[in-house]
Image (cartoon, rainbow, N blue to C red; front, side, top):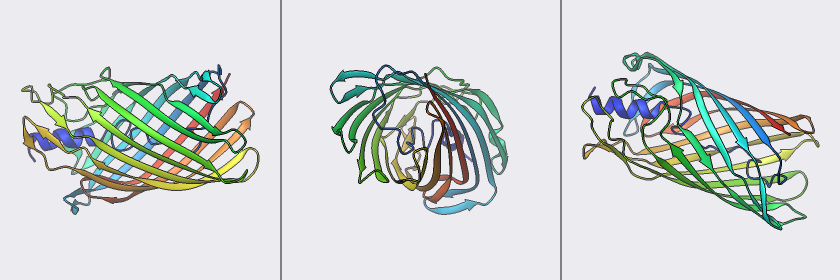
Length: 290
């Protein structure tokens, strides 16, 4: 396996900041009460066992496991009637491990790159609570990174993500969340031990979910998304690793108290053109408003 191919795999395996970097859960783009403080703690577990190149399965034993935590803080601010700004930051941390054909990548524990953002939410219909949003996010290269290691949690490069979202409430029971984003990545000029430069084309993602409010405190939902683009070059050599991945998700959100919410999500990749395929993903989230 070529060294630059290993470099790509290492980036692709970083579950906290890789294929589903800012995957949105239904309700994330609802307009929150201004001047509230919202603290969220996430746990994300993902496993892969198969690897694909150009849509062909090349390994049935490409084992990777990620156990990633994220701390997120949001402080909504009212910009105008029906317009809310959500300044926030997200700090990933955790452990990545490998087995089988992926074991040469080793294991890694550390802190991911800090993400800062400021989505703007426009409440289009106060009664129906339909909302349109635009969310800029900046990835700051502060995470754990070592060019001599095949696997890293930090990416050693700046990234910018622009996310667009629309939530439509049909009634008090049913709603649809749709999200689309584009991500631009700066160069990693220390991608190998010899100082190789990794460049990446824009990455695109679309997500859609249907929500059903079972009661005033419980919401069930399902849907999925699609990731495309992000083809990379190393020192100008095309890695031929354009992403084309679809995935599905099921989830439940429960308010334990008026200010404490828990969320559980289960899912997997449905199809993969390039890279490792997630056979299982479990996300848990605890949110507290104070």
